[in-house]
Length: 189
Length: 107
Image 1 (cartoon, each protein chain N blue to C red):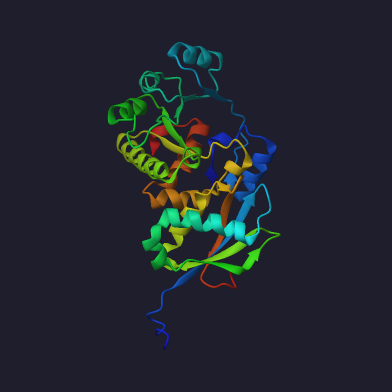
Image 2 (image 1 turned 60 degrees about the horizontal axis):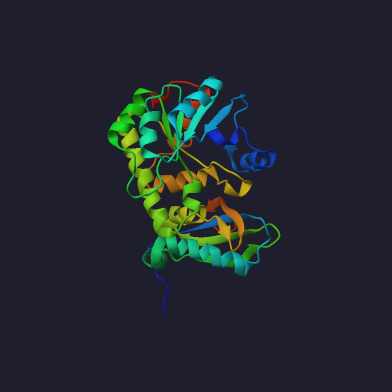
């Protein structure tokens, strides 16, 4: 089975080429990805209304806003929801709510790149915690590279080894993202 | 001093890596980043058990490829450490582990 990254679909040619070279599978399906970075719920709702058919991804690090976004059924993914590990803003009840509304949670590999070793360790621990709660509640959990340049990419097999070392299944970069792109039932397993 | 008998010797793996970086790197520049990342990730204890060795002869400056020798049990840890690299000095870059093999010829 091949590895899929949601955020490679609408990338520049250079990035796509490099990604395919190192083993990522880029779906040929035309999907519009709508990344929303607003700070109020109203603005988010407005932007979703404009592009209902797109894959709506909300990027917010506001704890209260994330709670409200979890109730929105038209949101597909919440991206990088926490800022300060090890105290994760995510909890069991929020995950349950997300599972009920078919919303996925995503962490990006870039979160690891930008910081010092202690931060990296805490971040990896936070990912593990998120994964464990997601497994228990049936929430879809994904990890993406979210590349800005081609140097933000990583070999998917190496990434899978890193995640498995920390107790996270490679499903987070294989099956879950494929299901999201297909628009199938996210919580199927 | 006599070598250990074959049954007691630790098994090794050879990892072929490729550096994808903005600039072409010499061995010295590459090795310092690789070591730093491996040290940070594995710590001194695992590093002493792992017998990690970045082989100088096998480094190809044109292709930006090289080989790392490591004990079998710690192969995954070294690959994880290399995955976490995002910079070589001031230039952006990353490392791809292309192949893992038990013999240096095959890798």
